[in-house]
Length: 374
Ligand SMILES: C[S@@+](CC[C@H](N)C(=O)[O-])C[C@H]1O[C@@H](n2cnc3c(N)ncnc32)[C@H](O)[C@@H]1O
Image (tube, rainbow, N blue to C red; front, side):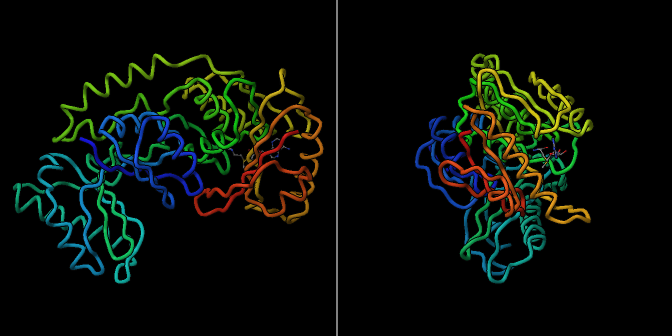
């Protein structure tokens, strides 16, 4: 059935998500803040779950109603056809965002909505679902804005950015969907060599390798909707076909290199790359001493922000940015994309960025993405 869907993403990644949605055939695209609405048949939404790199969730709207206070919220949710949406034995959870004048506490909104769903199922279907916030069978996503509440079901049931390959982390890892947005915004074509010389847990390098290999990042994961009563029978052959099609299009990735001066980061990157089943050349190196790629290619960097500044304050970080700029400037013919959360970065780095700067949100942290032709 042709209908509306939503895909959510980290703030700032909307344009990348829009491009991804267009490329899988989504229509009627409307971009909001952290969300892209689209229209299409159900197989576009299913494909989105398997293939989208920058999406956090793909959502199927199930109802919208006025909600300016708790009573309206409860009454609006109660009348939706829950017995068609939740089967006996399935667990549920509610995740809310946004706010209305009389409803400012997310946890309260979630509680009220959960009560309405449980009461509706008890009264109309004769069972009481358990709540499982960690791995619910049906995750109900609520968004409050302009006095209305939109309720949707999350097709995957868990964030699409939880790809499952992060088995080890070191300090300040990027969310996978945000790292994918950096890869897409960098303009890299996926064919030339690529290096992340500040690799941390390896997220940028792994997302770059997945992109280069044309691997759908969530093709192997079980989606929550594969167990939904209404749709699972019809979805099964579609998902089998999509998974086979996506596996068949994979190619060998370009040479990808990752390094860090911290041996623990290097070990984490190696473990995560193995879990992601992508070949990455990993080494311990100081980013200020790296040599050129052959042939010249793309650098991706997520520079330390100094959130945990030591006694020396901002000065050592500025010196580091300056030395990094001086050293990368020598890599003629390379392109670089740098994600920074520090307002000191741009001037200290000392290389003129090409094209517009982009704002990307790393959770609550406002970051800027710069592109350079070295
Ligand atoms: C913000 S973290 C990168 C996080 C990474 N993008 C991820 O998703 O896990 C910055 C990294 O730079 C590394 N680093 C700091 N100074 C360095 C230097 N001079 N050479 C190489 N790595 C350095 C740190 O060890 C840290 O892992």
